Image (cartoon, rainbow, N blue to C red; front, top):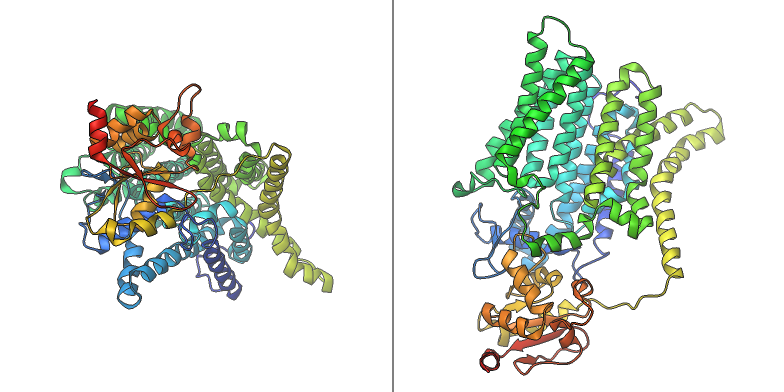
Length: 616
């Protein structure tokens, strides 16, 4: 700890407010970059689908109805998402739509909600780091937040999906358990961590690692502090379990409350929380019933034994989830998930794009080294706190080796350690005297704080660009102009007859749902098993297979894009995919080309002709 002054007073420093404004403006500016639809801030299909889900709720959909009816009709797709991220979107829609109209209200919500969550993240990280920096180090923590490029990505305008919620709740939980590790006596700290963890589980299964890591920090407190720590671990488990049990009827409809889904909030989530509670109660019982004071080794042995028993019980209760949240995926859905960049393991990224891997792991590795050094060289009174940080950062880093999406959590935890480093630098510069030294005192820490978080990624990106420039230049294929497609499909001739069923590349499904009133067969969601299977048959098999699937599903329109990324995965030597056949200009007589200029190819299915071709 840099300073002993870490009372939980409000963040009132005017410079902090100024930096918060800078963060908000940065988030708004990022909304203009990397747009999936030109002119709209959304970054990927999840943002579009989240807005569609919020709009459906605002338009009168039932609270528990998370089905997307226009995706893979007629049954639709039950999404694995939560209503929690919908609430601020619906609130802003309710306030702004009567005044501004729907289109403008959607823009206001898309810009405002992520920026507000980003300000929450800004505050939460500064608060979580205060046991390390003291109150006087808050300014340096704020500078660190501004320099953390990866954790701030989910808070860019347009990023209305749930990832920002997960990071915010994970930091609140981390801040609470780190205060316990630092000796904080308030009984509400474990309760706060448990509530944040349960809310994270409601948002999505991605919260399981952060819930487990917060529990691990409290487990360390038990190992080192005995009964006092066991009581805190039990309090965390109790808060987790009660909150998740109370959320069950809020999250799930009456007929779904016995669900044991692996990829969403379910009885599995409650079971995981109950396992933490049982571990806490067992550790408390051991401490209270033992006639002798337990040693650290005895506690460690007991903890490993109890943890193994509880994991075994969870396996017996939920064996279908042993392979992870996607254990129940169909083959087509599993293939889809394996091709998502965030679902790649860090090992895969290291093999194929090492510069990108360094970008994602540089700060966590640096933070892990710093925290380990503090464990070895710091004061004994702070050792539990730093051991907790080692656990958090190492856990986040290991998570990346399973899926790269763990980079957000790993870099957020790393930010806590960097806050300590920044505050330490600032405190040493603050001891200086003289004009030059006073100038350094004001400006030096800001430059020093920004140095590693900003220059390391820039160095990596520059290295990657240099490497790419020396390689053979790849032919760039423009993505489909979905605005052009939507403008055509929104004409009365296509909308007056009711929604049409469109088969399109999976990455374009959500865009079509957002821009048009029509239906799509598939979008990049793993629960859409039949839609993904049939979409594969239509695009990535031969003409006869495609025609049979198109006829069976009653597809009205077929959209083909040269920039479809799945094509490169599906092409095989000696075979011609139906999508490639169409791109090469070989169009069967049962498909009628529609008038679009350069770019995507759109065809109307002539079912009568296709049926007669099939009967020959």
